[in-house]
Image (tube, rainbow, N blue to C red; front, top):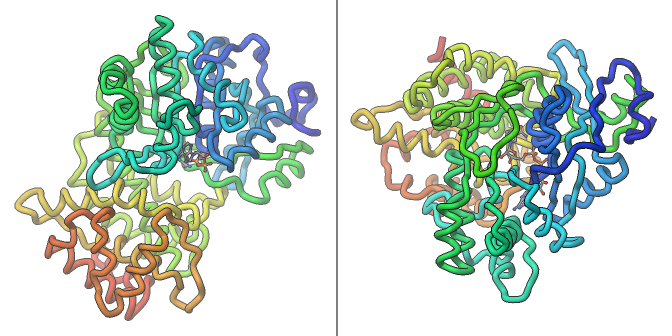
Length: 495
Ligand code: NAD
C-alpha cells in the first residue's frame, strides 16, 4: 500500500497512525531543514500532542531552501505530508508510526514569495530550524557572521527575492513589523552550543546588513530560545523502505529510522506562545546551558572519536566501533577525565549513568548509523564540539586538565583528511573546506603541525605547547602504528 492520506486507515494493524483529523490542523510552525532529525524529533512531539487532542494550531509547514530538498518536496507531496517513523530496539524490534504533523511543504526556490507570506502570516508563531551546524554562516573562531558569503551577498542585492533562510526570515519579519503583527519566535534545534544565542547573533547580523536599526530591532524584539536536542537519527538506511514493505506491506518513499531514546530541553522564551510541549516529555527550563554542554561534549564529541578513529580502524558502522572494548574504554576516558571537568552541574542528571547509556546507545546495531555520516563536515563540528573542551582543559585549574584523548581525536581527523586510509584506499572527504584541509594534511608527514596552522579552524591552538605536544605524539602514533593501536594504548589506562 502506498502511504497517503486516503490509505492510512487500511494499513497493517501493527503500524500506528494519526487518529486526529488532519484537515482541522492549521500551520503554527514553519520549519526550515526538514531532514531525518526534524522528522524523528520535533515533528514527532507535535504529532504526539495532536494525538492527545491538543496543538491543532501548531501544525508544521516544512520549508526547503537547497536543491537537495527537491526530493523531500516531491515525496511529501506524493504522500500528503505523511511519512513513517520507525523506532528500532537493539533486539531488532521495530515500532512504526505514521506521523501526521507536517501538513504543508514549500520548496523556497519554486516560490520564495509564498514562503515569505507563509512566514508573515499571523498564524505563524514559531519558525524552527535544523539547518545543520554550517547553516548559521558564522566563523567558529571569531564568531563573526560571514557577510562575504556569495549566497548572503546575493540576498542583500536590492529588488531580489531572498533565497537563504536569513533573507526569507528577515523579509518576513520586516513585513510583519510593517503590518503591526508581532514577530514570531525563531527556535534553533541545531547542535551548536548556545544555539539560540547563535541564531540571535546571526539573524541580527544579517538584518543589520540590510539596515542598522532593523538589526537592533531583530536582536531585541525577536525571541531565540536555546535548546538541547537529542535523538540519534541516521541518514535513512538504503534498506529501510524495503524493510517496511516486507514487515507491513507499506510503501514509504522516504521513511525515518531512529533510536528509542529522545530528549529535548528547551528554554521557555517565546513571543507568541508555544505548544504544550511539556505534556509530551519536553523539559522546559530557564537555563539550557548545562544540558547542552553535557550533550555536545559527551555525545557529539564522542561521535567524532568514533568517526575518524573508527574509520581508520576499518569500521564503517558506528555500533561496530562502539562495541570494541578498546573504543569503549577510550570514550570513557575522554568523557570522564577530559570532558566532564568542563561541564557545569546538570540538574537531575546522573552523569555516570548518562555516559554509560551513551555507550549503549552508540552500540545499538538496529539503527545502522554510519561512520560516514559522523565524518562529514568535520570543520563545522570539531571546532564547535571538541575544541572548547581542549581550550577549557588548557586554561582551567592551572592549565593542568587532561587532553590526550581529545588531542588524539583531532589528530585522527588530520590523518583522515589526508584522503587515504591505512591500506592506501582513498577516503571520500566531505567538507566545505576539503581542498585546503587535504592540502595541509598531506604536508604533515614532514611538518606535523601543518594541519593546525589553519587558524580559521583552530584559532591559536597551534601556539599552545601542551596541546601541540599531545597532538604531535598522537599523529606520530597514528602514522607509525595506526588507529587501533593508538586507541588501545590510551584505553589501557582506563579501567
Ligand atoms: P539532513 O541532512 O537529513 O537534513 C538537513 C536539512 O538541513 C536539509 O533539509 C538541508 O537542506 C538543510 N540545510 C543544510 N544546510 C542548510 C543551509 N545552509 N540553509 C538552509 N537549510 C540547510 O540532516 P539531519 O539528520 O536532519 O540533521 C540536521 C541537523 O539537526 C544536524 O546538523 C544537527 O544540527 C541537528 N541534529 C541532528 C541529529 C541527528 O542525529 N541526525 C541529532 C540532533 C541534532
